[in-house]
Image (cartoon, rainbow, N blue to C red; front, side, top):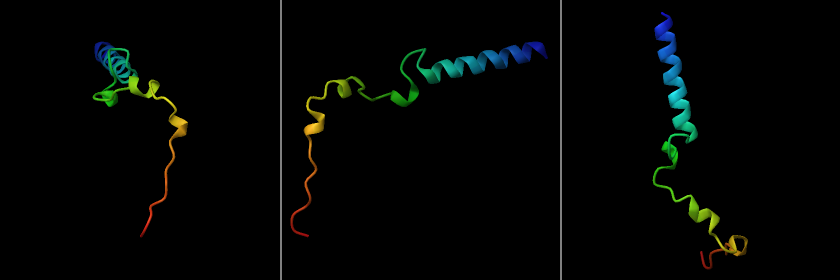
Length: 54
């Protein structure tokens, strides 16, 4: 019973570490280019204009 508890504890710690990104990129971040957000120039200068016509 003690061995089962230790195995479950280690499995939980492994899943937690994976979710926090301690073992590489987080699963949610796969395919995202997170460095591009830091490279944005004049991001507050972007304006959304209303549609003309309809």
